[in-house]
Amino acid sequence: MGIAKRTLVLRGKTSHFHRIMKRWKCTCSYDGTDFYGWQSQPTFRGVQDKIEAALSKILKRKIDIFGSGRTDSGAHARGQVFHFDADWSYGEKAMKMALMTLLPDSIQIHSFFEVPVDFHARFSAIGKRYVYQIFRGFAAPEDSRYYFSTGERKTILDFDLMQEASSVFLGKHDFTAYSAASEGVQKGRINPVKTIQKIEMIQEHAKIRIYFEGSSFLYKMIRSLTGALIRVGEEKLTRGDLEEILESKKRTERVKTAPAKGLFLEEVYYKD
Amino acid sequence: MGIAKRTLVLRGKTSHFHRIMKRWKCTCSYDGTDFYGWQSQPTFRGVQDKIEAALSKILKRKIDIFGSGRTDSGAHARGQVFHFDADWSYGEKAMKMALMTLLPDSIQIHSFFEVPVDFHARFSAIGKRYVYQIFRGFAAPEDSRYYFSTGERKTILDFDLMQEASSVFLGKHDFTAYSAASEGVQKGRINPVKTIQKIEMIQEHAKIRIYFEGSSFLYKMIRSLTGALIRVGEEKLTRGDLEEILESKKRTERVKTAPAKGLFLEEVYYKD
View (cartoon, helix red, strand yellow):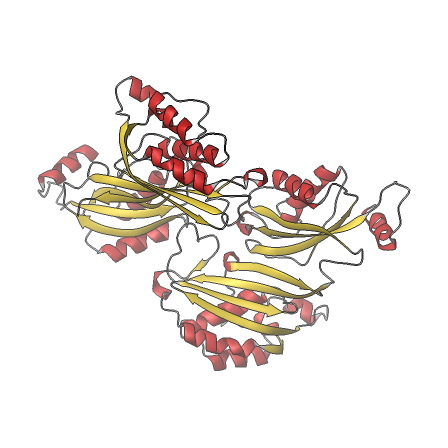
């Protein structure tokens, strides 16, 4: 039934259900601490489940939403995008209010508006921006859900070494060595060649934020790149090591995956 | 046994337990969202319980700690102070590390140092600074645990009216009307006359923060004062109304208690 309706929308016709389906694009943020990631789970603890349940209640029928991509269990989003089809005619503000009333405080709806029926949150995306947040020492309780704390012993991460080494990842590379996607890559289901357009590092007192921009990323790629940069900051790996590991196209124990709690999906880019 | 040990310390003698007791002052912060307040509870979900359990494990005997005062269930602290007695001789840094290793991320230890044996976290305190945090509209998921969100309809809180009205509370007053302490006041157990030295209001985009400084405060007093100021911001009460309510010395339904989540104990002041 979900498929039938979508087909309907793509043809842009009114249906024998006497409904005019429209496609809606929605941007949301969430604190992923208490969720098993974006995607629906058998236990119904994905962010997607919560939003689908709220929309289904508002629209009085089962609604499926389509996200721009998954986020890891425990990772957060400040600008996740999803779309869905519905015959809603009470305006954008009313939908935002209805959703905010039903959703927990840990999920917020930023915008909700109609888009052409060929818009797809995932397939229309042309790029994404992520940030990884590190705290040197122990983050304050308010920050502890959103920063990876290095703890007392590792407070002396060398920011300059990290920044210098980060340039290794810029441009087009086979990122198999910095991902957890090797099985999919081996079976030919996943193309491990990705392009990183920009890496920006910001230091603010004890906080380090690393921004990554690219067309798309492999599973756990940003957390792996960050884990490698942290090792450089600790002077346990060099810029040359990162280069060598990248070229090896093989995952190694020398690269640790940084914890999910420090990762935010900041923005999903679309044409115009 | 706890009492015996404390007496011992106050006399400054070594005991027949062959231990030299020292008094330690500790400053901590916590995210109160998942705790039933500071104080120990039968369910062991107070912040105090968590810290006592960690200290008891480190010091290998039952430790009682004494806080500067309670904080409400769901309220937070950036500078709560407590003291306890122990024969610890491995230095401040080692204790901080040991505590941080055992405590959850929602509790952080800032400082730990030896104080004279007549120091008492509660009775030596000469003042406290609190802040109440309001978000006009819906706070982002990251802020939603620490700001009271007014929601869409109340986004137009009039900051200037609130600030002007706040001066009503400055100085020495019987604050019975702005507290939940009336029973204790009636029975003569509690003196409802308190002095507020300073109220500072800061507006930063959608965020409003109200800082209160005073020698001490009644139960739910800051949340009641804030609730009244919010009503002024909504133009449902006037500065004159707040004055009249204060003078009535009677709690009224016109004053709502603002939710605990927006309240932080910022600092406890001691002489020198």
